[in-house]
Length: 248
Length: 330
Ligand SMILES: Nc1ncnc2c1ncn2[C@@H]1O[C@H](COP(=O)(O)OP(=O)(O)OP(=O)(O)O)[C@@H](O)[C@H]1O
Ligand SMILES: [Mg+2]
Image (cartoon, rainbow over all chains, first blue to last red; front, side, top):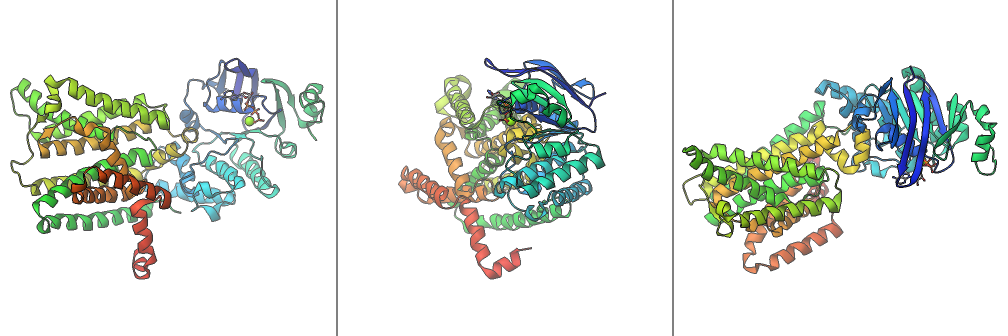
């Protein structure tokens, strides 16, 4: 059974059809890429998966069960985490405190011993994401790249994380940080079996991370396959303005 | 790590109890030095400390800029006084104040829960306008239902102590204030404190991180309203008369000024600001309306020059004194 199954999902914003009859599914343990031209509905899809938007039509199933009626926080408690295209942090809280929010919110135990364990886990993840030296800073004091890193590190604090949705984790990020993020994704995938859905315009990163890539255009899925397969699909070439090679 | 649980929690709790202990001893000795008038002034100061600290929980920590806090004090006061009067009549017994006072706080908490639920999806200005409208409606209700509330004539009610000496009341207000400070402290230092600050900074992100923002917003409204209601009941059974006047916006403006002057979001700031403004305000009583102008100017200066308010100034000033900072930097 796929971990995530999207059936005929649509989202309409007064007249504008942002997502149109979208269907796809992701197997547990996959790192799936989701690409498509600007405005094709990738973020809208993410928002529906995470529970921020209510779809106009269709269904989203997680481990075979519909999660459409579940509010965002319940989806998170069930192991679905996301990052935002424009990082959304708790700006007046320190980096360390940012890390503790999902950890506390999704753990049922809250004894001092357990919380100490969470704090330990937090410093581990911060080191893993190269943020340990800024853990005492307020989130608003971070650079753009650090913000993205913190979104990812924070997501890893969710108890029982299974599916990590990432919206443009590489946008505006320098090469070194990009490597850090990619290493983190690969390691979390290999060692903890976490499934990823990654929206990105960065073809080299997508090529390195994802075995399968889904391509959206004007709200619909137009192609799915390995990066070579989709790069040779005329529909995809057509979608990316005047036949520019999508994989270049 | 900068967090306050585990060993850190115990340390910060110890610090809190030490600070509050020292302040309580000083406050307990104060009536020996002050004349009756200033005992009264400081007792009312404690009333405002309770309002400021509880409003700071809602507005400063949870980011819900409610303008109905003064009305909740009145809801508590009227709740308690009306139960005392009509409940006692109906049941043909004298309902004791130790039931009426928690009842007033409970009613305020309940109404706070209701108002919080109405305002769940409102942000900033919408929330401010709605809560202000609620406060105004409550004031008009008190005026128009004069057969129940006595309207502008005022509803007289029983005193906690049968005396005109403010000193015993002073100690009740002091105890109430310590209780409120302790409750807010425990909330802020618990996971709930993290959730409230998270939803203040970014509600959508808080939801995505697993925080049930609906529940915690309601929690903030309920607890802070109950606390305001509690302060209001003490005030009612100290003054002995309830009128709709304190439900005017002026009163909310004073709470706002106190919190901002002391330092929004800091734990001790609003308490300090409330006592400071109350005492200065009484000392400048002869200047009546000009006091508000003075305070408004003060708020503008603080917002421009020093956002962290009086408490921040005090703390940073202390840090500059080497001897003090050496002993205080544990
Ligand atoms: N909240 C909203 N209200 C109205 N329209 C919206 C909203 N969110 C998105 N849209 C519209 O839906 C369409 C798809 O937007 P979306 O953000 O999903 O695109 P995207 O694929 O993520 O693009 P990008 O690559 O630029 O991030 C756009 O036309 C956008 O204007
Ligand atoms: Mg997008």
